[in-house]
Image 1 (spheres, rainbow, N blue to C red):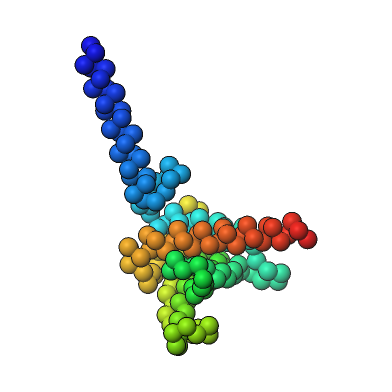
Image 2 (cartoon, one colour):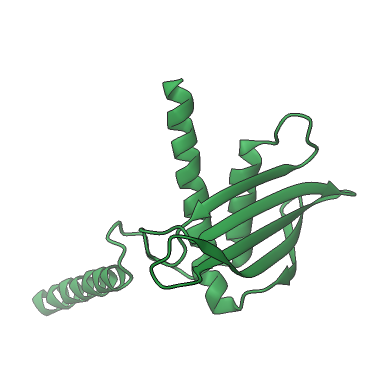
Length: 165
C-alpha cells in the first residue's frame, strides 16, 4: 500500500513539474499556457473589441486605427493597424489591414510604408469566414494575439482619458 501511495505522489509531482516546465517554457508565469488557438477566435475577439468602440457620428461603418508594437521593439511602433467593419447584405465584412513601416536610412526617425498586408473576413452570427489572408499560418498565430492586445491597451488608455475628463 505504501508503494502505491509513493507512486501516486510521484506521478502527481511529475505532472506538476511538467505543467510548470511548459508554462515557464512558454514565458507565461500566469498559469495560462499559450495553446494554439484558431485564428477565427482571435478575429472574433478583435471584432468585438473594435465594435464596442463604435462608429463616429454620421458614419455607417466602424473604422479604428492603432499604432502598435508587433515586432517586439517598444522603442518604435512601426506597425499601423486599421480595422474596418461594415454591413454587406445580411453579414458584416471586417478588413484588418497592417502597414509595416521602415526608415529609409538606419537610425532615421522618419519612416515610410514598406509593406501592407490584409485579412478579409465575413461575420454572420457566430460564423466567421476568412475570405483572404496575406499571412501564413505561423505568422497569424503570433500576429492576431498581438493585435488584440494592442487594441485592448488602447481601449484602456481611452478609458483613462475619458475618466480624467
